[in-house]
Structure formats: structure tokens, C-alpha cells
Length: 136
Image 1: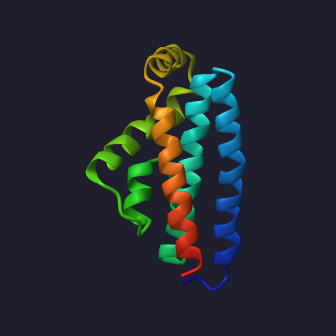
Image 2: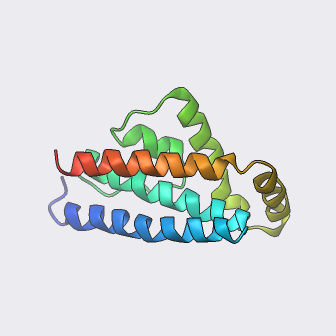
């Protein structure tokens, strides 16, 4: 552990910001703003995984948006199928930022809203695992 960082403060930052963003993700989904809902959903998962990485490593989480990499560092268990989904969800971070990808993401997200449901499931699982870990 690095002496000059407050692990609990960093951990709580990731948890608290993920909670706020989760509400935003759901609200965007309800208004059918699917590409931004997917974008924010990726951030929710990223923040939850970074909280887990902080707990696991007792250090700052790496500067990455790669959910699969963060999942592997988190100390939480994921199936191969879940890791594959996280790999796909990671792309939502970049795709929502660029106009050339927005249309493609918008089409995909309208046709395949299952990723919102997967993000809700991951978020629920990750929040439960992180909370259980927090008090163990």
C-alpha cells in the first residue's frame, strides 16, 4: 500500500460516483437516449470495477476504460461470457464520443437493448459484490 493515499476515500469516490451515474444511465434509457445510456453504463461499470481494484491492490486503479482488464484485476469472479460482454461494453466508451460511431451505436443500441439489461445485471452484481467485500 502506498502511504500517501487514502484507500477508503478513493474507494468511496468510485462507489459514490457510480451510484449517481447509474441513475443517469436509467434515466437516459427511459427517454430512449440509448447511445448515451450505453456510454454512461460503461462508466458505471468502470467505476465499480475500479473501486474493487482499489480494494484488491490497495493502490490507485489503472488509467484505463478496458472493463475486462479491470475485471481481471478486481478480485471478483466473472465467467468467460461475462468477460466477453465486458469487452463489448468497453467499446461503448469510445463509440459514443465520435459522430462516425454514434450512428452505428444508436442503431445497435436500438436493435439490441440487451446490453442495457446486461449493464444493469453487472452493476447489480458488482454493487452487491463490492458492498459484501466492503464489510467482510
